[in-house]
Length: 87
Image (cartoon, rainbow, N blue to C red; front, side, top):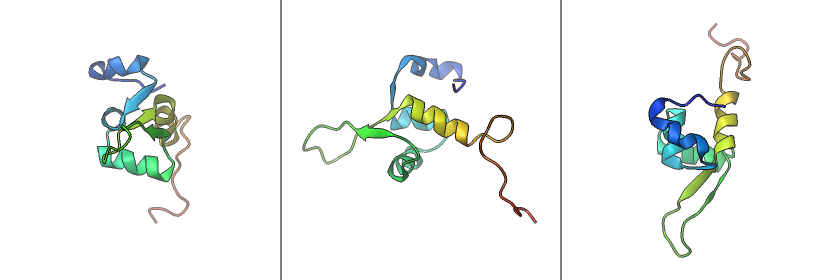
C-alpha cells in the first residue's frame, strides 16, 4: 500500500480516485494520469453524464497502488535499470 502524506490520508478509505487525486499521489500531472489510463497502465472508467462532452474519469485505487509499486526501484520494486543504460 502507498504511504500517503498527512494531507492525503482522506484517500485511504476511497475505492475510486479522481484523476486529480491519483495525480497528487503519483506526483504527476492530471494529463499524465489520463495518458496512463489510455495506455492501460491504470484501470478506471468514464463516469461522466450521458451526453457530456467532457470525460470524468475515476481510477481504481488498487490500480494506482500497483502502478506505483511497479515503478519502485530497489528492494521489492519491479523497475530495474535497462541493460547497457548509462554506458
